Length: 306
Image (cartoon, rainbow, N blue to C red; front, side, top):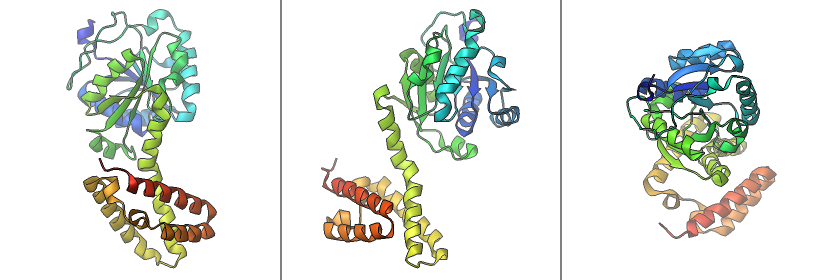
């Protein structure tokens, strides 16, 4: 089959909410042909295929066929072992099984159709925000093109993520040829791609942690403090909704610096010190967090506006 008529095939190793969302979007756009799906069990792989609306569930790596693109969507702690296991499994196959015998060529993006050409060796990428493509070194040793692609979206539920995905920033990192393959594929489903240097992956992901992962922690801490001071529990849900809604509206409308309120916004360091001492007496770790965040708030107040 000539490359121009070939829809690149996609294999999934790991198929949780991120993989299900991306694969569903690619299937709908005919960007990739979802092929083999491997998870922790055959039943979960079959369930993932049902959500995606395509794919063949397999029980082990040795059963996975050649694919042009491989997505390793496993937890960060399992990535290195997964890459090594996949490399071991593929290394035992005949060379022809892992080579698409077309010359490597420039990928032509199609927003509603297949990628025009694929590379002579597979592209493999993972979805971790904190780890770089180097985690996939065992596959690079086989000649595969390696990359990471991290979408800055909370994949809390697949139906919601499918609706929210258009416009999502996507950080690409790794081999230039692999990123060139992935960029039009992610763009085809509405992602806004940008490059991040390998040395900056940890800082890049830490930013996402500050923006999203710490918000539930801060809210839970506030609610624990309220309840410790005698606020009736039935008042908290409405207060949670109103304060978060107003805070988000202020930040998105005014920007973080102009939305800052409270003693730090007033430069009231004496009040900050008194509150910090009271919080530390209640819980030392929470008190340390209060002091650190207050220092950052004061620094934000003093920043020269953009």
